[in-house]
Length: 342
Image (tube, rainbow, N blue to C red; front, side):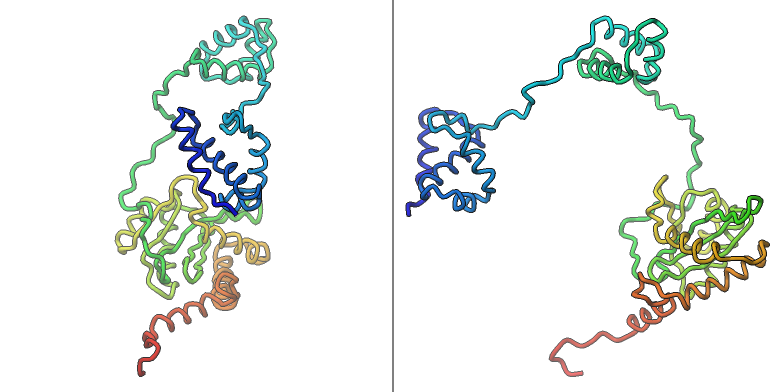
C-alpha cells in the first residue's frame, strides 16, 4: 500500500504554479489524493480525516480533476429567491404613514391605509417596513429612556445573593415566599412559607394580610421553630419583605438576599413547597375558616411535614432524619487513610 505523502507535494505544486485555492478546497484536495493513493478506499479515507462517508461521497461526486474549483465552498443562497411585488406607490404610502406614527405596528397602519383607499395586508406592510429598514430608508426615532413605571427606592440592606455564597449546611439559605389562599370567594388568607434549601425544613404560618409587620412576625416564628441558626434569607421583591422586615433582618444580623425581577425560578425550593402545601393541606382542610383554627392545623401539618412525611429529594427521609444524619456525619472524626494504624 502506498503512503499518503503524495497529497502534500500536490498542494505545494499548485501553490508554486500560482493556483489559488481556498483553505477548504485545499483540505478536500488532500481527501481526494489520499483516496486515489490508498486503493480508492472511501471508508479508510473517511476514518483517516475524521469525516463521515456521506460528506466524502458528496464532495467526491462534485470533484472534477480538471477543475479544482469544484472543491471550493458553494454558496447556500437559494437558486430562486422571492422578489418584492409591492409598488413604489405602496412603499411611499407605508413610509409616509409610519413616519407620522413611528410607534404604530403594521396592523394599525393597515387600518389607516385602508381609510385612504389603499388596502394592504398587515403581513405585506410588515415586509415593506423590514425592507425599508434594511435599506436604511426608514430609521426608528431614538428612545428618550422615559419610563412610566414607578421606580422603587433603593433597598438599604437587601442585596443580590453573591455567586460564591456557600450553601452547604442547614441554615445557610432559607427561602421565603407568600401564597394567596382563597377557600371561599369572601375568604382570603396570606400563607407564609419558609424552606431551608439543604434539609427541606419548612415553617408555615397564615395571616390576614401580607405586610412588613406580618412578615416580621413570621420571621420571629421561623427563627424560633427552625432547629438550627439561620444565616441568610432569600425573598422576592414583594412589599411585605421591605421596610420593617428588612430592618428586622439587619437588627438580627441575618443576611437578606433579594431576587431579580421576574425570576421565581431562583426561589424554586419554596415555590415547590407552596404547591405541596396547597395540594396536601389546603385542598384537604375542612376545618373552621378562622385564623386561629387554621394556624393550629398548619402547626400540626408542619410537624407531619418535617417529622413524618418522606421526601423524595432526601432519599425518602424526613427533614428531621436528614438533619440528624447530617449532624452525625459532620461531628464524626475524619477517617484515617488506608494503611495507617488507628
